[in-house]
Image 1 (cartoon, rainbow, N blue to C red):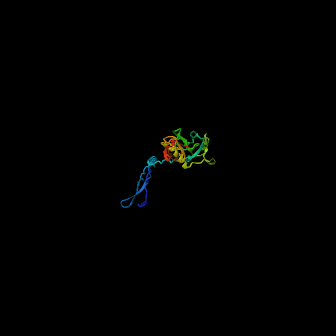
Image 2 (image 1 turned 135 degrees about the vertical axis):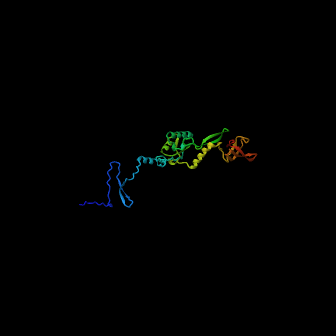
Image 3 (image 1 turned 90 degrees about the vertical axis):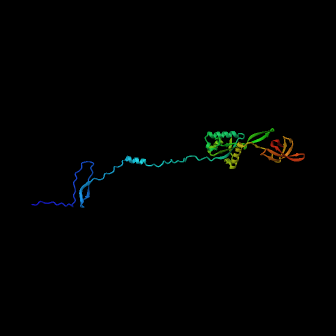
Length: 272
């Protein structure tokens, strides 16, 4: 009796049984084909997979992100205050006031403006007061043969104020004792023209910077005058020319039956 023979085909694929690995960290074996010296393929050798690089912990990622270059801080945008009041519209007006009380009324009006907190609606002087002007001029006059300098109101009974006209300022001005009304037609305040404002302000500036007061001469060309002082005292003549800048008056006198022009100081003569 012949025993059965088992022929194995070397070319037939076969696998090796790898005993299980009880280690919890063991990884499954991977079969690797390897070429033999005679050109065949050897089986049964296994290799473990390449170990993976350990993952970077989250803390490291956060640290890298923190060290990244941050953009420069931008200045905060300035928000415009939409509720801010617009600048006041300052205009010059003329007020009728009691004559000979212009200064006291102007001072009273300045105090009332500050008490009611309405300074922003009025112009401001270099001294920080509300801009309320009593126009004046300095003149030289002769009384009782004596020369003196006096200050006179340019517009008696009137004062000028730079302000924005609204309900509050209108009532403030009208309720000030001594103030009559604004100058204007049909009760409507009239704005001063630019020429009027410049003339008034120039007069005020000249009062503070002028070295000598203005001379007022009360005679005109053609007037008959009498000399009251000097070598021609009691002579009478006719005014030929008035020189206000020098304070002189040229008078035509009859001397030795001949008309003779003579220059006299304005205070040396008087109108007949």
